[in-house]
Structures are given as structure tokens and as C-alpha cells.
Amino acid sequence: MEEITDGLNSVSIDNDSQKKNRIQVSNTKKPLFFYVNLAKRYMQQHNEVELSALGMAIATVVSVAEILKNNGLAVEKRIMTSTVEIKDDSRGRPVQKAKVYACLNRVHTF
Image (cartoon, rainbow, N blue to C red; front, side):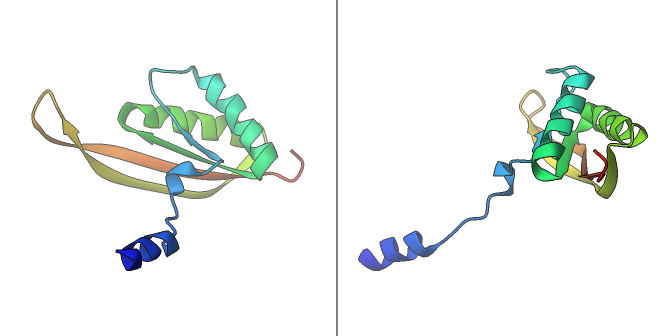
């Protein structure tokens, strides 16, 4: 039993969902400029910000990124798209949702 405990204690889990500079954008919870201002603050602290969204919130991520780029505050570092399977309780079957991830770097003159 001690061997199992020692083995578990030596395992380290890198949890990306706990990143300090990641913003998960929602379509319904906050207004657009809440995310713009939050992204500005994260870029000041971490020099980059990661934005991610599912489904209808993708348009908000695109808008936030474009506002920051057009104001000369950020440049895009990486953009990824994918689909994720989410179980829909009302339908009882999995549903495919679009997902977007955008990483923006702070401009040096920020």
C-alpha cells in the first residue's frame, strides 16, 4: 500500500485549465468590453492572453481579438479551431460544438 501512495505522491499533473492568462468567453454572461478590458489586464500581467470559446461565443472571441489588434495593443500568436463533443442532457445524445482558441501577444508599445 505504501508503494501506491509513494507513486501517487511523485506524480505531477500539469493542468492547463488552471492557466492564469486564459479567458473562457461565454456568450451570455458578460458584455463584450468586459472581455476586452480583462484581456488588456492579462496582457499587462503576463505579456499574452489566451481566449477560448464554444459555439455562439466564438463571435465574441473574434471581436475581442480584432478590437485589441485594431487598437494596436496585440498581435495574434496562434489561432486554433476544433470541434468538441458535449453530452446534451435534453436530447440524450452527444452534440458536436465548434471551439476556437486564440493566443494574443502584447505589443511592446502597450
